Length: 508
Image 1: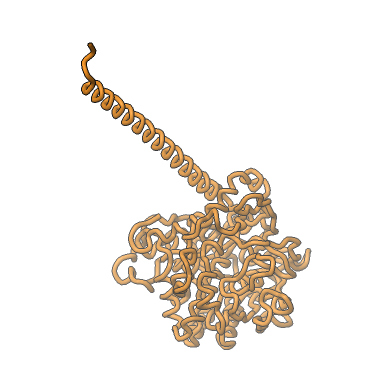
Image 2 (image 1 turned 45 degrees about the vertical axis):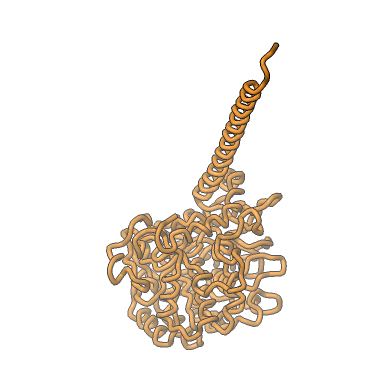
């Protein structure tokens, strides 16, 4: 995909999911018919929900209200999820959006009736299990600052059993163990969920601890004051990593002060470059503040995905991609039409995650990509706990899969986060421990829910075309070689016959 340092590393994970992607070609018509709107509202929920949060503020400038079809809607809209491997049946998982604007009318999000029995494509892309012998994130606390985390996930056979701490609820009554939207629960399990017995999706750092901080109302809406208080509560609670689930449209002094407070406490803030279900044309916060690791989502083909992608592409570098800004740790300026600057990316389209009450949901958006980055950060700290927040951010940027363009790229920043390189490949691991090095045909089947467009289908078609073309070339080469051998044999036979005739006695 690229040349230079790490040039082929971004292509290898894509090859690893090619087996799963190929199945999409046959399912494309059904997937297109099954994709639907998620029902996610604007970043600030409608009047019924917004009235429960004091001074939420106006909606994000430049938001296209209905753009959810490009994020959690079309990508996660109950389409068929294709699994690689013979005999795999299509599966459907309900979508889980960042907000729940009809919470007053229909109540909290209902549990999913389906459970995945294999990993999603993002796990094959990232390969965190390759470094689990070195680090599983033990001893590291990741704060999920959002809608709360379902308390049931932290008890019994829950994916966060024994590792979930319920922090404060900053709006409403109770603690952070109630998650009406389900968004925070999905994020927490992507960060640190334990792999279920049936082989379903696991979190990136399955031994890390989660501190739940509820900083939204029941509909998932928030404001600068709630986020600022949530960040401070996370830092005071001992979290080394703070995952901010919901961005806001405008900068605010209280939020900027909270970002500085977190840095002083040694907590790295990880935040999405935009809301999950809207298109924005300007920076959002806290991702827009210096010192916050800003994360965008990518699809299975490595291209920017979902609502955070903005209007600009990812070809070419930003104006600051040379000189000091070209060194790891520099910040990319946001490109025109982008939600915010981008530091790193991670899978953010058609992911599988646990929701409140159990079952598997399909999720899409930059907040879920930020959860995978937060989990990777926990793996790094699990092995190198002495790293500062700044050093941790530099490590994630400097070890990312390079996009092959001038760095930092306005669309994908320094590239896709790479747990294997960031933590260090285990010495005892074989070739399969390197992302993408395993034979896709021999890999375990994975679930690849359909994206909102035909890019992975086109990618699968291209891979199939190249394979068929290569097979044809090999057949032609074999035929040419056979013809050459036959001609050589004929010439040899003719020569030996002539020599035999020359040496025979004359006839009488």
